Amino acid sequence: MNPHILLVDDSLTVRMDLRAALNNAGFILKACSTIESARAELSSHPFDLAILDILLPDGSGIELLKQIKETPELRSIRVIMLSTEAEVRARIQGLRLGAEHYVGKPYDRAMVVRTARELFQLPAASDVTLARRSRKKLLLLLNDSPTFINSLTATLRQDGYEVVVSSSGQDAIALLAVEDFDMVLMDLVLPGLDGLQTCLRLRSLKRMDSCLIVLMTTSEPDPTTRRDALAAGADELIFKPTRLSVLSAQLLCIFIMKRQQLRSGADGAEQGIANLDPASASQGELLYQRVIAASGLCEMLAKSLIDSSFYRVGIDPKVATQITPVNLQRALSSISQTLRVFLPPEESVQRMASIAALAQGAHAKIP
Image (cartoon, rainbow, N blue to C red; front, top):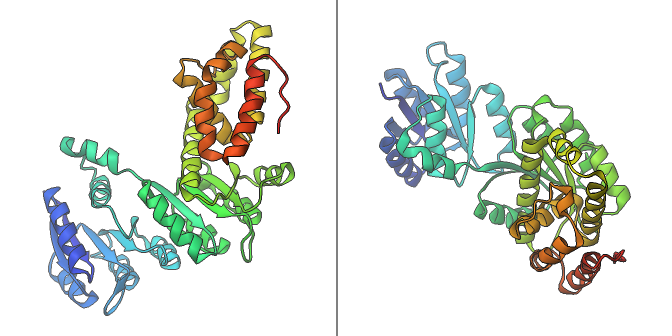
């Protein structure tokens, strides 16, 4: 039997859009625009799932959620909330009251359908590709600058992230205690709890084990600041560039690097090196570390980008004996193209000069 869904949203466009998407996916949907009409539907028809907007003409979707979860005959109805990034506290309250999922506005139709299917364990072969494509990384952006928030949120959404915004470390901690995120991106300097204090408290939450935390600073990170950030539990500390597209690319590289670390694991890397000639492996490791240092990028980002440059020319950077001056020479063009994306032109030239010197077997002076 196909699940029955009650959709409550005051936007006719949203109702029509989700009606078409969910009906095509095999659900039976009833849509209404107010809490009063939703209560009438709930009292006269059985539903398996309710999709509730938070802001409704005659009240809050949170009130309706609370009624559903406190009424014995309605308690089994699963609930998906629709919200904007400005409704963080309502989001926290909704999850605590028993909402199964939150979908941010502007929403992705395919993601709403996928979420509904997952709740009822209804995979469909025809939707497998669509579901994979619609999978978005859930990112919490913690910042107190409205201008920066608006600009970066637009960029991140274009790049496929689902973004939730908060301006308070306290709110972020409360939200992450009840909801799973793929990444937290926050400023080092925040009102109230600063980035380091917030990071420390987040890492004490069990559900944060697999979440990436990236801190941002407006000044070039120095070794002491980076050490403090990593000690607080951050995965990386990055400089906040003026080009938001660069920041988005940095986040992607950090995701890729973290995924590679989880897949390969430190034990696998050590085993691969142990089977190689110790002297050659040691020289390769040393050269690799010098290239990373000479790049001028944060370590995690540098490793991801340098590794990709090696892979493009058929060199496996995980095999230490393949990191030789000759092979580095082959990868110079690829490395140069990468650095030009992330560094100012003059600095990228200087950095490449140092890396080129390493390819000639010299001990390059790092700018």
